Amino acid sequence: MDASLRSSSPSAASLRSRPLSVRTKPRAPACASTDDDESATVEEPLSPNARLMENVYIVVTIGLASPINQPAYSAGIARMIAPHPRFNSIQVTDGSSKDGNARWVRVKVKVEDHIFVPTLDPAAVAADPDKAVEDYVASLTTLPMDRSRPLWDFHFLDFPTSEVASTVAIRIHHSIGDGVSLMMLLLATARSAADPTRLPAMPARTGAVYHRRPRSTGAMAFAKRVCSYFVLAWNTLVDLAFFVAIILFSREPHTVFKPAGSGVLHAHNRRFVHRSLSLEDVLFIKNTMNCTFNDVLVGLTSAALSRYYFRKSGGTNNSKICLRSVLAANIRPITSLQTYVDMIESGKSNEVAWGNQLGQILLQIHLAMHDDPLEYVRKAKKTMDRKKNSLEVVFTHKTSEFFLKMFGLKGGAFIFGGMFANTTMSFSNLTGPTEQIDLYGHPVIFIAPSAYGVPQGLIVHYQSYDKIVKVILSIDDQIFPDYHELLDDFTVSFKQIMSAASRLSK
Image (tube, rainbow, N blue to C red; front, side, top):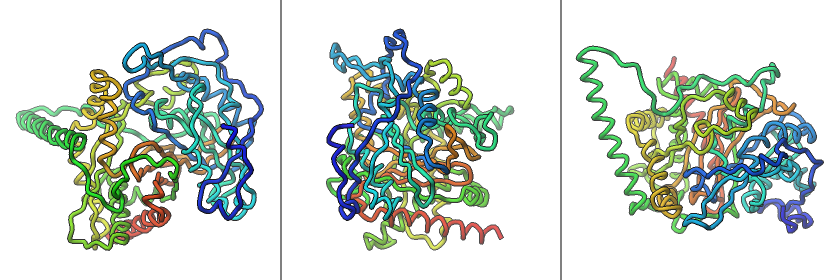
């Protein structure tokens, strides 16, 4: 880190309103297995989507059930993470072409350069350890990464909070990979806490967003199939028209979620907060409503944002209000954890399983106050069913790639930037293990991924793990100074939806 970060800690009182000052010290060396000269000369061009992630970063907060054994954790990173091609490569441009001929170049990795143990104000930590962790993770958004090294780092916060015995914060540049690939890589380096000889158990997946379904035979089945193709084509055209309109000229009205002048980056005041929900309760609502896991989470998001909006704005329920949301969707085929283990062992990246393989779906989040909390889930199911009958996610992915290849980085950035600048929020859901995992000898209590670097005031992530679902908010606290109240709205709304589902099932 920069030398300026080694200044003495501010007073405990001042820490309450801004991120903690940080002093760091390097750990004992833990060398990665990338020291041979041959690996240091391998080059590979950046993928189109990786080049669009110039200012976007992923932050993952991991809560551990035990204090951090720093030598063991560092050795695990050196053995399992650093050998991966993206984690021992830097981005290089030579200026020989319009876009600099961006490419990945392998380098020798010193793991100790990527591990930080901050020294925080003891008084602030003792007074409120949860706030100390929150402030420190928020401070990472203000610190530039050293681009002469691979763009990732680990931060050890070895003190207990209300949930865990210690915390690890991971920051990774989004060009290295998207949330799905990075989460799968992390889990491939973990083991089941119940049986350390095997990989973590994962729920069954249906694979990519769109997959070929078995075809029925007969005239009626053929007619239905032809009709479904027409509906698919029409829905896709409508969605693409909406996508183009948002990119070119359609601006979203200003609300408490997107006030005037908010379509710019405020990295200096980004906050990350999270709350645990019961996975069993989410599945109960899903089964009661005969919908999908995502339908429940979209409905919960609509309910929580509605609750916050009408409380803050004083608006009436008569007005029709919709927020535009960018839903990130995985377009990969089914990939097992073993695929990632093989990738680590071979040191070769698989572009189908790795990288940024995401498409975007533009969702309308309806804001209303319903007497029946389940109405949020019903409306979410209707919206998501309509989106599943469209190829929007594939075309948005390909459109960004096309513009980047045809018009260079500025063309791709025009599409990518316009989509985020003219929407209010982003939304994603990641699936995790169905059991507790052990990471380099440390039992994991929770995993809370998030991101920053897009011109939106709110990003909502959901992460399932073991018996919980984490809702994680990435917040611009200039827009949401009361962001803990917004997080509370998710908890209250979830309890109301669960209560209504319980009554319906009787």
